[in-house]
Length: 262
Image 1 (cartoon, one colour):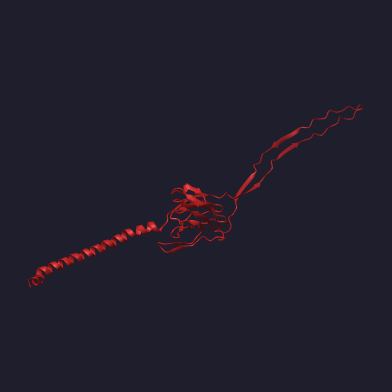
Image 2: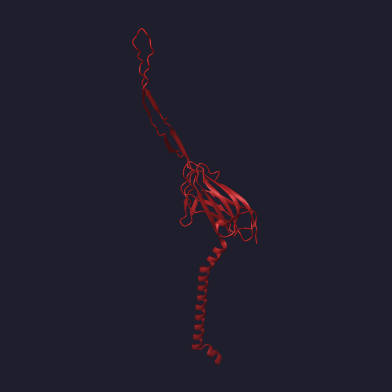
């Protein structure tokens, strides 16, 4: 009877209710901390695991100047004028004697030099630009620097697959700003899209070295390079159209290499 009375006493019920409130508050606090932790730290881990790092180096090579030289030569001239004195004969005498000829007096000799005129004109650039892309060498990077490229058909364990390639404008006018993409065999099937590249005049080219990590091991892993692509800005969801050119048939090329896994 006394036990029942104690359990039903106001003081005991107040203590039980207080403990329940404290437990509920602790549970809510733990849930909030867990949510903050997952929001703050999980994306960093996913980011480190899910995306590959790309290492890119480039060297710009200007095209040879295209000039047409038109020469208009003017020959040097010299004039020589001379006067001839007539020969007078002595009056007729009974005895004919030879007469002494009068020497010819030379006129003033003149000469001058004339500069050959050279007119230099630039050939007018006609037609649209035209990108071509060529893979030069496959291999790997020994470090994270693009300058550490080593040519090889096989990528050793722990190294970063890499490729060297050239993009050139063989068309008849400057390209303006443009971009390229690289499809690389990473664990997340990543397609790298470049930042805007400098305008290429006719004959200009850029040599690139591109390496990456988190590669998928295997034989005949494909690397594909495409010049002059449409670009979608993820921040604004706007599209930057590719440069209009005379032909797009030569904008893509690819190569295969063997990547040795751990």
